[in-house]
Image (tube, rainbow, N blue to C red; front, side, top):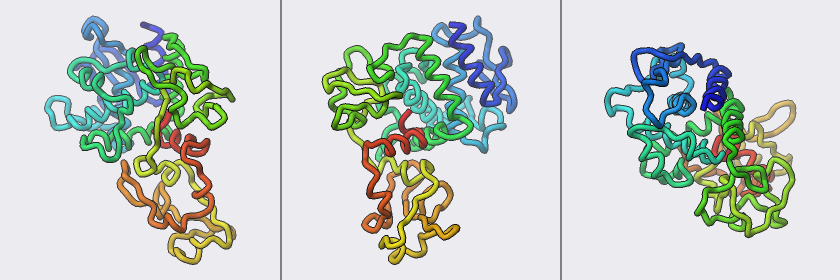
Length: 310
């Protein structure tokens, strides 16, 4: 579909990624231009749109250091980077799944079977034995930040509208046919029935068929979003115990006390980039941390900012 291709060509352009047709390989990034074979040389189930999306996922997995390296630094002639390929596929399933597009923007050839076998939560958890899961989770956090955000989410939303993906009361895509999940089991539905995933205030019945952003439970050790790059400042009140008991973790600026940051995360947070995460001062954590409701509005904001929720 030409209109779908145009959405992803525009997405690539906004990411400063030039697209050209031709070249010496099926898909090849030469460090400046992403070359994609002409339509007549593509497989029957290939589209330019999904090929561009898949390469964006490769870039997100590889990270900014590989932005201008040919083929993002990947070797596509051997199995050396098979784990990173699986990570890109996991990321693509995660992004497409959040917009009801897994049946439309799937990767093709030998990785399609892996894509289709992935569970709904395609990124996996911090305990997932597949090393590609950890890479995909880190890549999802990158997609939640500049330059990927808001460019990639907007392209996914435009694609869903173009393809008339069936929508939930909240304005999000519905889960697929045969999926029995309901709003009543979703953590994003408040006690009053309001859907926190909705773009506008809307209440949904517990019996309603769920949207693709349905989440049955949240695990803080898998997430850590609120302690990572989601929020830049964690303010501390004058008499909070953390100031007295953990002075080495306190920052002061213009007379305002806050938790010290190390890179893009709170100094009290421990664990690798993909989790699991733990708080080294949990019993003494600041009041603002205690007040953050798991599954609440700020929790959702944090997860969106690190790419775990769309």
